[in-house]
Image (tube, rainbow over all chains, first blue to last red; front, side):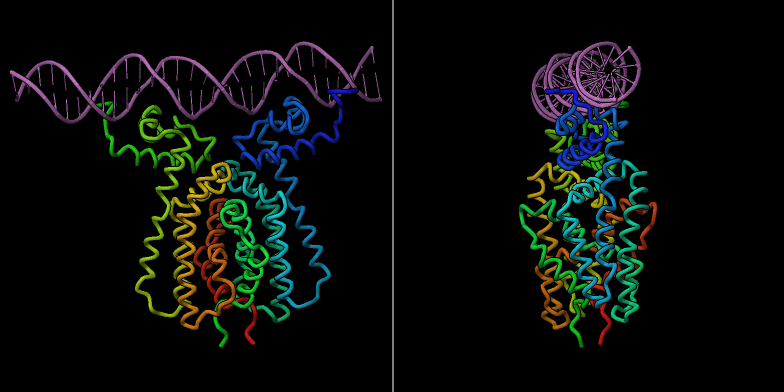
Amino acid sequence: MSKSHRRRKDARPGEILDAALAEFALNGFAATRLDDVAKRAGITKGTVYLYFDSKEALFRALLEQESGRNFAEIDGLLDGYTGPADKLLQLLIRQAGVRLIASDLRHLIRLLIAEGPRFPDLLAFHHAEVISRGRRLIERVLRYGIERGEFRDNGLVKFPQIIVAGPMLAMLWQSLFAEFEPLDLEAYLDTLSDTLLHGMMVRK
Amino acid sequence: MSKSHRRRKDARPGEILDAALAEFALNGFAATRLDDVAKRAGITKGTVYLYFDSKEALFRALLEQESGRNFAEIDGLLDGYTGPADKLLQLLIRQAGVRLIASDLRHLIRLLIAEGPRFPDLLAFHHAEVISRGRRLIERVLRYGIERGEFRDNGLVKFPQIIVAGPMLAMLWQSLFAEFEPLDLEAYLDTLSDTLLHGMMVRK
DNA sequence: AGTTAATAAATGACTGGTTAGTCATTAAAG
DNA sequence: CTTTAATGACTAACCAGTCATTTATTAACT
């Protein structure tokens, strides 16, 4: 019972996914060795193939697993809210920024940007399941503000991308340039909220 | 003089870079075969190595070549300008959006996001040469508006990233999700400008 | 102008290393 | 004693980078 061959059918897939996330985040898809994934998971490569059909299937499973986790939590935060809409948007932006940057989501999104075009059906899935959910979340906040008469109804509801863009870019910045020029995330998100809410023009 | 072995020392590097851009954009760094790059350029792999030391050097040369081309042109557009600042910002955003999406820059930026973390000195170069130039461009427009008393001075000058974020996300969207849900770039950029300039809140 | 010699560009076969995926075998569990 | 998780050695393919050889271009010399 000591050194090897311990059978743990139910725990394996999760462990493999965790290891895969770490390795993919480090090296990208093509440059990741399944031997390394296996090693990190404390097993051998053969075992990986007991649970996943191929390297690509592993990548796919990874994205599908991580997707949507955060949405549920943010949704929960919004559920009971009845206060002013500007505070709500501030909350949303803060949550988006913090979650994008803190979690492993960050690496997965970088991976998706990188490898997405080579896996069109993966993009389709992500668009259908994840993006659409994010859009609904943003629309919900915007509609709330418009109905309360706080937000004006410029075309923004049609382009929720404009709201995510800021947090998204912060995430990319942290992934790429943080070591050369760190970003003060707090101040950044505050300025972002302020600009989106009140605009740049002097009030007349 | 017919089939092969034609010597064209001066034209080669450019041709190789063009071919490399196409292949890298298609497959990413690791999955691109130098044989394919050579074939696309109408030569053989050996010839590639006459002009570039390694695959990595080729990638690097590619990024360095394309960088900055667009800045000069945008700078030129701004140079003589004396009109209202909001129109200037609109112009800047439109230019950024259109150039990011139309040109091959788009693929290169995706590549940089994807492979950047594995080539830290490449990121350093890009940060020093390209990003900083973009920042200066944006600062220039913001300062112009603030000096004219048109723009209020919230912290935006410290976070020019907020201005690029919108065009940048449009570029990513087009690269990834355009086939599932195309983005009306004109309307998007208009809405973006409007939101940044006037904000979302109802004027009181 | 024509022949030849020197030079430089380009080739393509080759190698050494790497790695996704397989499968016969081993060993734990019930 | 049967079942099945896990192993690890193996293979088949792939590809970055090399280099001896081939071919074009230019120079040099009649």
